[in-house]
Image 1: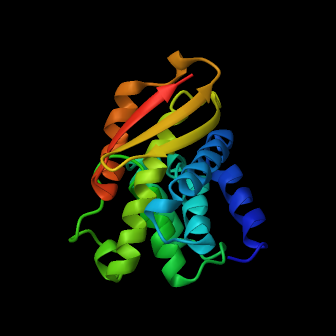
Image 2 (image 1 turned 120 degrees about the vertical axis):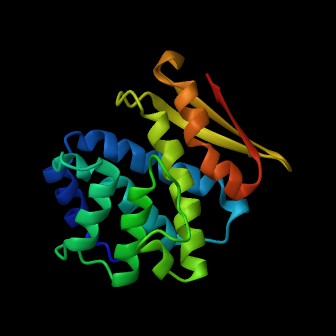
Amino acid sequence: MEKTIWPVIIEYADRFDPDPGHAREVCRLSALLFQALGELHTYEKKERDILKSAALLHDIGWSRPQIAHHKASRDIILADRTIPFSDRERKMVSLIARYHRKTGPKPDHAVFRDLDGADQQIVIFCSGILRIADSLDRAHQNAVFDLTCTIGDDELIISITCRHPSLIDMAVFSEKSQLLETTINRRISLICT
């Protein structure tokens, strides 16, 4: 993505997201996780940028209270042409934002089924990362200072340095890590220091 897209995305998030600071924190944590998991994927900057875009826009659906916000985020991203995404990027960003909570991607889901297999895998992987990043800022307190990952044959350990461990909801983390666990075929655990 071109550098000129970021101010547009940030302005869009600032306008529609009731807590754009949370979106920026989730974006930061998503980028850290993407980088830390580098040995588990072959994705590059363009996929990272798609993930970061989805992270910045994942909660804009709160501006439409008549439907679930994750689905509203998807619909807003798909419909709005002021953000200069390609059609492929728009679909992927909208789906990653949609799958940040509740049901994960399914082959019969609209838009998801229209992607080719490689793009579906990107959406699944990035959605798994976004779910974890969102869970780490569940309290909207920017509690996580840093994170590292230790990747084993059957386990991924995410170690975070945080302001106060009580700000991390371990039950939510456990639930939201399931998509990435399935995707990378490793149990995921969290250590807070």
